Length: 276
Length: 281
Image 1 (cartoon, chains in turn cyan, red):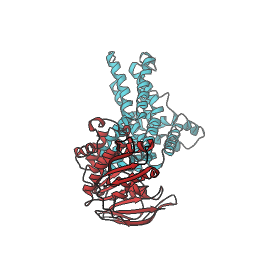
Image 2 (cartoon, helix red, strand yellow; image 1 turned 135 degrees about the vertical axis):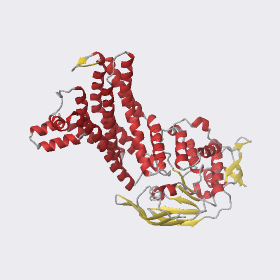
Image 3 (spheres, chains in turn cyan, red; image 1 turned 135 degrees about the horizontal axis):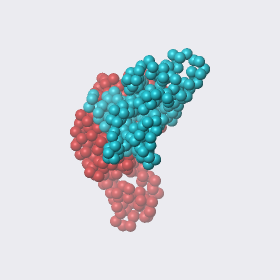
Image 4 (spheres, chains in turn purple, blue; image 1 turned 45 degrees about the horizontal axis):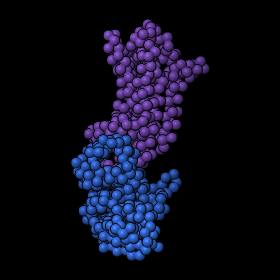
């Protein structure tokens, strides 16, 4: 089983590396880091952070805005598009087990969506090291782990949407709506309104906890803003209950669990339905 | 043996297969013909275990959906429309050989036999190959392993005459020990390859008949055609069949693969008014 899974993952990587979306995706994230260098963010001093730390903070804030939608749209477009174009019909006529095919695609896709994001960050670190500036490795490691968790969560959601929608157009619309809803329920947007409308605190906290975008954003802010000036009210309450370390652990584990559960449901739907 | 027992398939209240009953034994080469929407592709997808359906499909007594690996390891499938895979051809061959527990060199040897320059194509994205090259690759993957159930959707449509000849040879070598299911919109494309014709119409089996054929699949027929006068359009048509003329286009000679002769005669029929004589032997 493992062999077929790794073969499928490798095949998906080989397929994705030649896709136009991957070129664009890599250019965007590489370009963001380059722009941050060009505009001299490594030289600036904001909120007490200088050099690479400031660049990483900005980069991570941009990631929370665009990485989920990128992952969702490219995943559903390519998976639902492959089914629509007859790729599933042919590839699944070969004796590859369905679980190896589905999870292999998930693993291969994860490598492909995560590597450019990580690569851009690594590029920034390499540049900083070349200039002889000290690197905060703990921060770098924590941001990398948070990005892994965020990517996995939205990849799982993308795989679920791809299996539920029967056409690329429906899948793309569904993915965009998911992203929009999660974005709206960030702490500082609709959740703020909900609190002002005096909705039960438990409900507001529940919505905030369930939103992987929120957990990523709060954890990212927590790492560079110990005063938590930029946090919303719900995140403040959650932090109060879990503590800094507890919240960081939650922000890593919850999105990974969410992505795995979504992909698991997607697999069950895929296995029990028409394959092509 | 393949059996379809009361197989029905419905998409959003539209019945695509309607209680299909069919049994296909080893050694049978079945032409599955019918117009668009007749149910051919759906029937094949049920056989490949890709669709849920009512009724029962078994391959050697096994349900293809519940026993994917055991059933599909025996199946060589060539779709009508090649999948738009961006991966390099070499990756596709390695993947297919690995999941089929086969040797990629056998597939490569088959592809080479069909006239493809492997060293040239192995690093190219599959989707960038020409229609004929893609067809050769898919046939190579289907025949370059121990598949005894061949399911092919208009497999020879994009092949040049030489590749068709080699392909027919390969089918001939397996004809007694394999089941072949060859689909087409047109019977004349596949009639000479098969010994049984199943015609589908609106999801039902409309015709199920045996075919008697005295010409071997591997035969090549020497052919001479004489015209009443030379004609440029006819010369172009003959050029596609690699025929040559020694007298300015009035008489033409060449060879036609046995299974292609109906298709060839179909081409000649378009110029019936010009033809003074035909000899095929």
